[in-house]
Image (cartoon, rainbow over all chains, first blue to last red; front, side, top):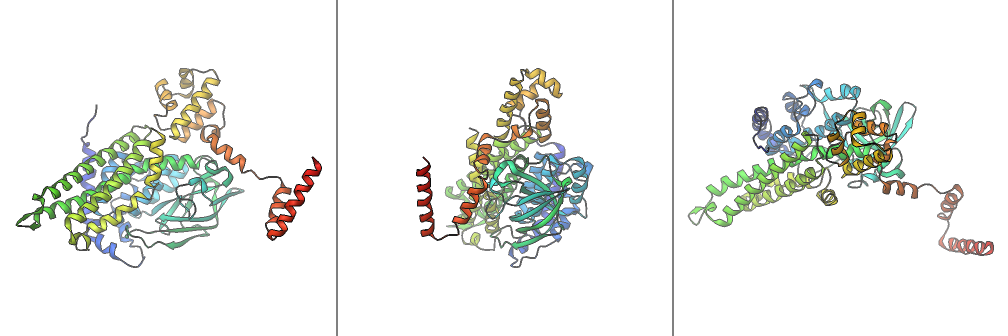
Length: 380
Length: 114
């Protein structure tokens, strides 16, 4: 049977996340967005860590909250609604822990998962993209050469969320570029590993509370014990991780859209032109009706994809659909909200221009929406 | 996408060994329905599952994970013999007129050997 009611536990998490977002995120969002320097604000991490939200999906036996994917989506929507930029450090961490939880062996999980849990939690990151290898993972050139009981990593990763901030990274590298997908491997690399340095930190259009940059690997030694899964199974590991994380991003986009919609709705009811609130014009009211409809549609899609994951089913198609639909819907809703607010919407007097800039990133990272369409169309 | 491809390979390898779904499922400790879902690509296959199935079907893990296109590509890009690699390297260092002269020489040698 189909049911759309959240469980008591899920409702409890939703309430907790909403309270956290109100108290620990919203008051700082605008200020962090306007910073012009690139110094990361560690207070974000401390607040998330205090609520153990960095360990959201980490199994309880390793110190995390251990929530399932649907609960994760519910929580992420609330955080996204407050500030997507401040959610990013957590989002980057979840990507890495999702991967580690999925394929790590007991020893790897025991050594690394507790690091992102509890009050002193560190961040983590997933490093796939390179300057010359974005959508085409098989073009990855970061090289892993086996030498005794270590792999030696050399190369550069680009656009990595939490670059330079994380306690550990899951890094994708190839043992043989000629093997393309078949040569890819995933390694756990300590954030303070010798030879690992932070390259350029990106100055971004949105998500300005977060840090994204380059990671440079210069003869970084990684113990064989830190290879995830079996040698040369990195492509499968990356695909599975991304399939499982996409609904979370969809949920975050739903959160942003919801916030933009709420601002637009309040404004449309209050703003008077020609002697009456502008919401009395069908042109505006219908825009709001469409926004509400599409937000609800996207939410259901993210819930369905999350549910499939929790059932152990293949979620590939639903995950890609929810990523495409939710992220494009969110940009459209934010754009509509700016339109309804008019001149006010285009200024920093209201948060909707920030929502718009933040949410645009979602169509690009974790597999562009064009790649998602390749995945969906190949499964039709 | 991935699971469907892997699922088909599981089915093929199983059939080649003359095993029924029930037989393989019982060896793996799965229900027949679960194995059927794996073969149809409906259920998410964890790496550990694929490893276990590969062992039971006596196939290398790569049989299930690498698609034929990837294997063909890898083969295409295999290094040529050392002499050819050295010729290409040295040729690239020469000016264009010299390269053209050498090409004509190679064509002349080839024609003589025919």
